[in-house]
Length: 471
Ligand code: SF4
Ligand code: SF4
Image 1 (cartoon, rainbow, N blue to C red):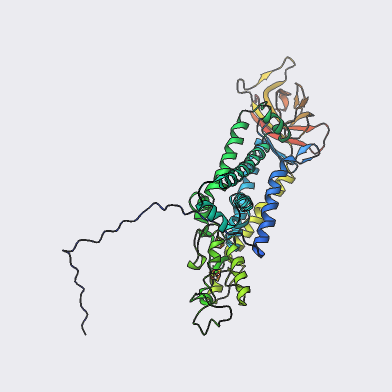
Image 2 (cartoon, protein in one colour; image 1 turned 90 degrees about the horizontal axis):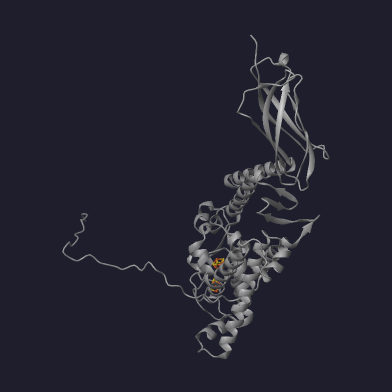
């Protein structure tokens, strides 16, 4: 039989199809479920929530454990004070957090999204309140469909009031990391807040929390979060994902508990829909890996309960990876994870070393450009400078400054002075050298600043000394 070229009828009108780009939102009623992964989530969510609300209240040795003091331009983080000069260190801390996230994602998929992301944590709290006030999934669906009556209005008012209370506490706590938290709670309600921004940010975070965790919920993960979009580039065939095993589950279908699925020509999925009902993003994991899946593993807990009831082995939905699913060997240690791990260790080590060896004083030398040099009444050659001394310790202290680099060099102005904590002290300094010791027209000199009370608090800065040379 010879091959024939298909004939296309060009007279017929092309088929037109309209694709709706706007996907209207379907309200998701999430069913509460208990199980192994939900217990892990409970621990992580309440622990993170507790840390968020408590850390700003804790003081150690009179210093807040975490406080970002913007007016004084200093950040207290776990006993260490960071100044604007330490901005590079703080940037590295953020880079380490980002790299840590990439590393964890490569190994374990979206555990950040499922267990620790603030959107997940606050949504969980809001759903917990909703369940307590309006009842189970079926009761909530019924309530929403029911005509408006006093019972419905009361439940809705209580729910939204509690949501707003949590949102307000969240906003106040957030601002409490920037404004002294004890004063904040007094000043806020007595309208004595000195920093006007505080009112704005409390209001902003209250509304943002209420809207994101109460109303938007999964929409934030699906349409607003950039991480959800790009995290797939960190995935490979060995990354852990929540996955349904179609080889075991299909063909799906309901059956009696006593029925043998093999005789009925069925797989292990009883098509109960529980995995969909507990999913906070409303997807069906049986359709395969989807970017909407935040890896919360609630569908695993739900399906395991069904498997238990049916006396089937657990794990129809499980944490697994692509290699395992097709029966190939999976590897935890692989070039990508080794690379991320080594980079992370190197960065953490460098930052710990830098913070540990950080000296809380800095000196900057600015040479007076008005004159190259001048002679003093005693015939010495003199250069003028301005020294900027930054005290980055938590206490004010006395410092001494000295200069070296040329024989007979000395400071002819004040060398002993007091600098407040966080102050940049400006010290005009005149340096003189006997003319016979000047061998070159420009020579390197070093200024040294030393704390009077702490021997290891000192710093050095280089500059140039200009003078006449007789050839
Ligand atoms: S599919 Fe499962 S793991 Fe993914 S978001 Fe839904 S419940 Fe969570
Ligand atoms: S919970 Fe398990 S058995 Fe029920 S529909 Fe989902 S995959 Fe099938």
